[in-house]
Amino acid sequence: MEREQELRKLINVLHRMTRTAARVQWMGAGENEARFAVSQYNKILARLSELDPNVKGVFDSLPEDATLTVVAMAARQVVSYYEDEVKTEHRGKDWGPQIFGAGMGKGCGPVDFNLEDIGNWIRDRLSEVQRHESERRAEGKHSG
Image (tube, rainbow, N blue to C red):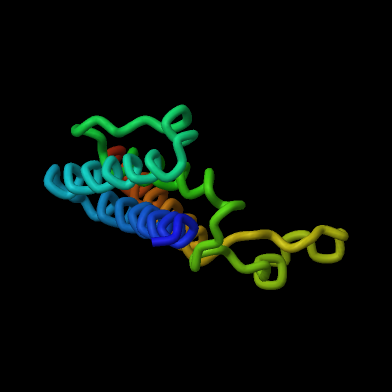
């Protein structure tokens, strides 16, 4: 297989791993899922190291007990490392300002983001709301 094509495939797998690991962690995954993700990440990193020896000096394998959050972070870093070299099917669109008004009329260029970023933002806000609601309940206050 051509090096460029294999790199693209491995980076696409890591990108999907990032999304999946974050979702599964958020849903309360168990140790089996985390161990599987760590194993897959380490295999992909080993293959990338064969294709690109420079990777060995930048990224480390993950320990067996790493969480899915750590797997997601590590995979995203590797994807970012190859972002300029390997174009994946998951690149963001330059349409953020038109939707959110960011930089409108201020001479700012488009913002590079994707729907995953929006989903992560929503998930973070929901988590905050749930945490605040739990704190209110613990204090004996009602939300309404």
